[in-house]
Image (cartoon, rainbow, N blue to C red; front, side, top):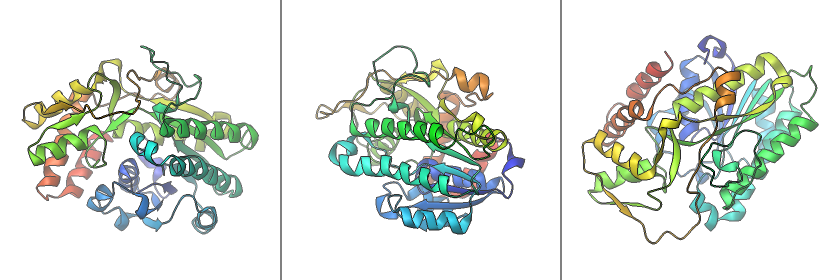
Length: 352
């Protein structure tokens, strides 16, 4: 991330009240950007971080639904953003089984609405569309998925993100393929992102923290499943670098990018739980959830060679480096401490 680049840039973030969106808003504010966030409070299941970091106080915030294309276009017209980060989504696998229609509507039609808004407003120079590592057709390979591997998805969430990727590719080719165009867009795909402030249901770290708080066991659905764990700052740094690259180089740099950890941090759920508990100072509190009855991938990792070589991006915090920062954040949260100061310090340490 080039901090000087972001000073006074007008940035619109959809889903700015979510986990990644809240951290991105704070990072951009610290770099001097003017941030407008577009999120639906009624659809947000993780607003605690947004409130804890006072994101509404450091950005313009619109409580709106990404499915409302007319309101979205009005926001584009009035704010005239230069850079877009589209993060608004229904992000949970198990919830996608319970609410498939809404999942597809938010993740696919919501993406389409943003693509159309970008196409219709010439203020936009760079657009970064955030999907997921689960957009790939999972073959349970032991090697990482590359950006040109087929899209797919078994569960509705993964499938909806694969659909969104196909939409993005179509718009790249149909409307943003002029080599002289100053407006450009890319998709970005990250693995299992962890960090302070994630309090969503059905996510490993928040579930562990709640179990520690209540002095109970944490129910784990797939303890032997491997995931590419990474601190939230690492992929966000990649997203920012993609936006900078698009801003300067235009549509000739339209692409898709994987952001994940080094191979050494592709660990099992059980390993991460054990490491987190040790960092916290408690015994491993894992217990298998035998009631889990939905399909989830067992093996999943990303090949980050393209981002490494072409974008000069690389992971900065290993799992062992990340966990003390994450544990400190949650402990401060449970003590009702100064989370803004702590979060600003963590951002400063990473984006030094």
